[in-house]
Figure: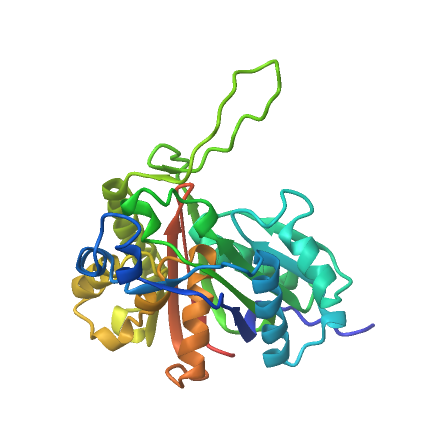
Length: 325
């Protein structure tokens, strides 16, 4: 009888990113809406963001996917599943995952998942369960959003916050993922994006709306969610904050990250940030930061990384991963 090896966890073996060429600074935005670099940076920590002007979301996603495959030593033919975390691809159908599959030359199932800014961790949990069940061995996660087409560019409180980016990673069997948690509250009043009603003659015309966000309520939720996700993780694993090497938090607002850090009385270097360069990049945020940390030698094999995100849904999610194990 053949020996069956139970796979109990997963690891990330390669990351890639796709960045639009166009950089839009706070100073440039001040010529479009009533704002200033001081107003934006003091409230959010954002100094600039990437805005797609000639790239499609598929192009950004494909660039990230190909780099992740290359960095993990994985061929497109050997990918067993593609999961794209996105609010919406370039099309309503086919899904972004389907078009990425076609573009990179893979021959596997592919689907999208929408968990807003928590999309990466939701997708990671799905990938983990497929791998633990021994159905697949190599799963490509692609996180991509073009938020510049979802915000109202006359609203200074929203348009300054977001950027367009794609990130991707290859997930394989491993021992790195110690903990993962997903939470949904089902609150749709403080953050939503309502689509138009179409021109069906049997219902009222409705033009829909851009992203709506009650900033104060979203801030309160995000801060509370980050703290609660960390509390659950530490309690489950019987760890202390000092045992964590890096806290890789969703880059929504630097004030949220600073508040979490200050409540734990930990040094700034344990809470890396890149929101100043990219703004809030939704589901792509955490992988984008991990990519830069690894590229710059700031994380190493075996480091304990706590990751947490919070976003529309309202959703929150967290995981603890021993890097590259």
